[in-house]
Image (cartoon, rainbow, N blue to C red):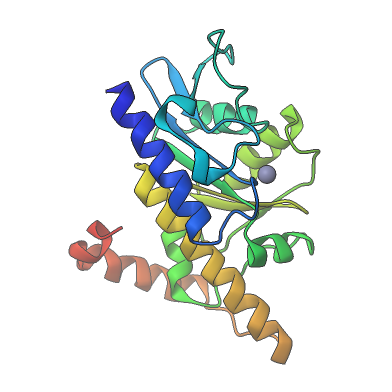
Length: 215
Ligand SMILES: [Zn+2]
């Protein structure tokens, strides 16, 4: 079981990199285990990752000796997994458009109905804190507020999922929304869909269950 999860974790991290969502060695991925979580190691090139490189972190944050150093953002993953029992996997990226919008410290508004896939009416932006800090983890948990994605001020973004594949698909979708917002903002102020329209969109997605299942 753990080997299968290690394999899935590394596959997801390589896909994240191949999609251009994680420049260099930035970004990281985690998945819940029975004792804590597996997370990508710190500072290793994605194309060199193998399943044995995944770091097994216990729920209390301790790491079994002899493993690679975990991602510097391991607390971010631990705290979100602890706060959100409905979540099994987390993808964190420094993708271009999400990071660009995060420097403005503003949310991505509902300029497209696909925003509802993130479980909220907009993609919030967590308050700034130094990377790898306990405060950043607290700020992210607070900003998510039950939703499945948020920006991290002057840093990047986080997407959550019930599987690694779903977390990665949401990360790619949020990056698309950020790109659409950036492009629209070059020409003016985009119209934002109101809450009652987003409620209709959610109802439509629920009605066409097979559309949701593709997520
Ligand atoms: Zn980061």
